[in-house]
Length: 353
Ligand code: TXA
Ligand code: MG
Image (cartoon, rainbow, N blue to C red; front, side, top):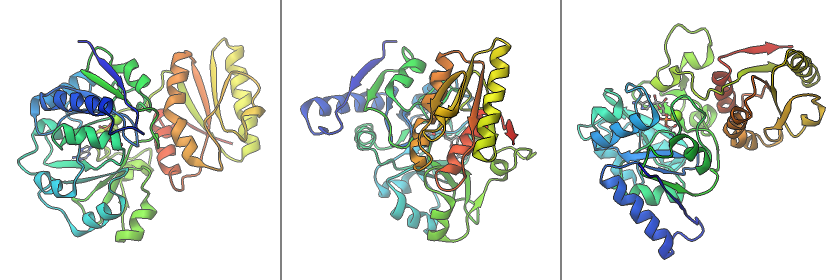
């Protein structure tokens, strides 16, 4: 299959050229095809969420296990009723404040949503993205677009169209290139079918932000406790996602000892003939001595760290590094999403100094 790649100028969405690209993406989606497009979190791989065959193509293109359900993306709050059978009052409060935006809510599904979209579950995950390009494409595609992250299953989520092309060129109909994404980690997932609502995946909308709005919110134990015997409640969280090819270790502790330990570990691996990558920050990068050293962003603005996380893991893949040593980050705000993804990428391998 030939994959069409179109650049869209998000400052000119009303131009004839942009309208043409959106119309073409919409036609492909309505005909049951696959279109990758930017959202504010990561790039999504879209298909008509109400069409079982179309959703099925997503699994084939990504190599995704068929028990891993998809998120259905909408643009209008009135459309929620068509796919969610029970919508509690708290969900409307959350939608009021944070939709459109980086939070996904899980509800009991209606008969409109095929099991092929929900991985055979009786529930459906719903998100209303904020990115204008995503919104135009969802509208043009019929209003209910199932979209997982647009990566090959097991690779880091894509934060640029180039990442999507690396993984899916020749396997999907179209990629709409709207530039780099804004946030860089996937949406918060909140299960609204349980009381209190439960966070199944941390994202840019944090537990604190939700509790301020609706009161108590719980967190899936398996996210907190690495040795939890219970499988994660979001089926996708059980796979070793976000995995770089190299073995990743997180080094935690006070800054100076962390830097010393990373330098020591890197030197040892390099002496043994391995290629080593180091993930530091703007504040620390100059203090590393050997290996391929990258700054992930600045500690004074953790959003920059979220923004570079997946692209750095992909760069290290390309550079064929064998070991990656990474600093640790505080788990407040977006930090809980950053550490959740890093811990998964590291298979929970942490060195404390
Ligand atoms: O930010 C995002 O959410 C991005 C963009 C494209 O919107 N999408 C995304 O989709 O991250 P995906 O498929 O890569 O991750 C969705 C996660 C998976 O872990 C999946 O198991 C979980 O959501 N999920 C989906 N439906 C669910 C359901 N009904 N119950 C529990 N977990 C569900
Ligand atoms: Mg994903």
